[in-house]
Amino acid sequence: MKYIIEHMDEGFSEWVILEYSQIIRDVGAKNLILSSLPESTTEKDIPEKLLSLGLQWTTKDLRHVEKDFATLKPMEHGRVCLLDPRATSDLQPAEVNDFDYFVFGGILGDHPPRDRTSELKRQYPELLVGRRLGDKQMTTDTAVRTTQLIVKKGINFENIKFIDYPEFRFNKYEATEMPFRYVLDSNNKPILPEGMLELIKRDSAQTLDDLL
Image (cartoon, rainbow, N blue to C red; front, side, top):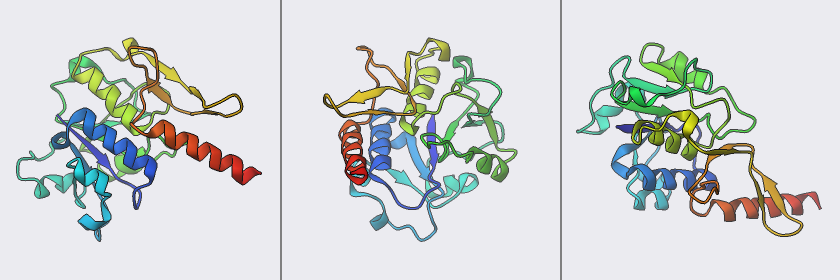
């Protein structure tokens, strides 16, 4: 199965680079595609870290993604799942053979959440089938990880161990609460992309400096 992220922002923030890097490590470079990048995008605009991990990308939209990838099958109506916080039903393990693609927009990980899924639904009204991953906002890598647990490992959503809005404490005086849901690892720790905790700490310190 293929995972497609509709990259709905210009450029790549450090946060996004860390998330995309982790997704590539989790699903494999051949299974992830960034679509709908600005028409003017060239390889020089893609962060070196992502290129070194084998990131696949295109400026084509969802209907035409396969034109840039010789081995990619065309998208069929009803076989493309859009992970949509406003969908009426959660993704189920039994649906593993119902979909060829799982699409994630620039919607998961925003706080406060922006209803950018609606943009995708309006753009591709017949192509996409909406499924939910619970009722809490997730970072993009968490959404992909949760989808994998459901469709690859056959775990029902309600049996996945999550933590909501975890607090990360860096010392006696510094702590940051993240406004997202995360999957827990075997040690009951929230799973974050490599380097993300350091970035959160740095951003937290910068915010404190700005206030002072």
